[in-house]
Length: 580
Image 1 (cartoon, rainbow, N blue to C red):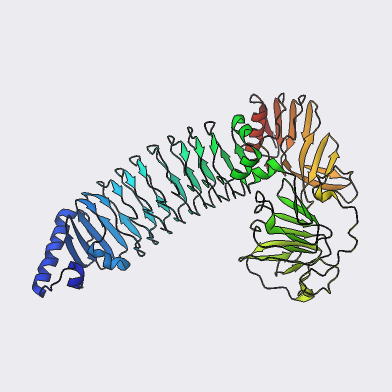
Image 2 (image 1 turned 120 degrees about the horizontal axis):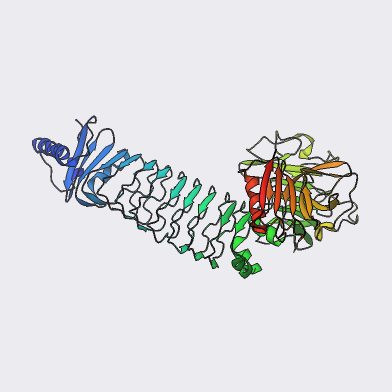
């Protein structure tokens, strides 16, 4: 039998003799067996004590058993053993618990059916705790009760729960879902802040406000069920929810807070009432939705200027830069500063300062004669698009893409990518290279791209062309695909899977906003085999569109749902059919 130091356990100023200690130990074991109803038979008793309204026993397998009535408070003597405790068993009769902060070895908790509350900071930073089963009697969870429980994957929320305090689950980086009960009338600030694995949330029906920072930094959040009577989405409520692709805003919402959806990079589909949308000024859209795909689609093409450089941001989150010597990427308009995925460097640019704001930058196309020094974030490498086995630090004419992992550095050929001048030295900062003939008439990058006549070499990046069938397309930033941007006003229309521009074939990957708006359009056939995105207002204005036939897409798939949503927003009575 192991023995705790009696002065440490009792916390009193005297020493008991060995006989008295043995009798006390036997007495505590009898109490645990008689009254606890929670016991550990296989493990060996180490030590224990009766303190006020509770009796506790510690066993050699790391199990702490607490029995008694009322509230388990902080500053109990078992805290001196917190680093050894792996499991806590709370007996029947206990109604409230707190005081288990920083029990870093704790993996499991058993709670009684008499429990009503979990106090402030009760299990804060219990970093090994994996799962908690709350009984159907729990009414409240206190401030930061489970904050920093980084291994917590699962916890239930009983219907008895009616009070949640702020930051109760903040920093629970392994938590994947949170189905909050309808009994809650309020969800406090920061409740799930920094829960980086959280994917699904159901909010209570009664709440009228999603408060500050409720889901800030939940980078995996994809599915949010919003309350029907919601009035306000407050500051930073969904800030940085990078995986959130769509959200349905209830018609009752009248107020968006600052940065409420900022840096939700993937957010492209926001469904809201026409009244709410029309009430949003350009400033309000920026303050609430900066660095989202939705905001980019609403406000592009956007033309900006940094010193002598002109940049154009397009709807696909690509950006073309022309003009002066040095382009400072980090000085972009903050509405787009972190969402650019493709950078196209035009003539006359001699250097580009890349650091802040490159979180989503995946491709750099250098059309200048300059050697561009690449900013390499930790965990990624810039590679020549034709050689992804090693990283490059500087880019000549050609294309670089960002790949995961810290690859070995390319040393041969001066780290030049795609350049015909392989003799350039990697140590060159790029500010001494000459741009050659800059006066080549390439002015399109600093203006809205004009429709070009098709050439044998196909479409230039972002260029537009009108094809047979009365359809106008726009090339992507890298010129590899096209999207439908407008169509003629006639009774029958067909959107093909591919289009040809002077012999060069392009896949049709997107149907843009207001692509089909004609009042005469009644029937639409869509070959969806290459489609990856359909804007919710792709057919807005086509009020007589009554029939759509979809080929090469199965009902229920993501693209099929997007087509159905766009069709119903144009004409609620329209019918859709699917063909192989």
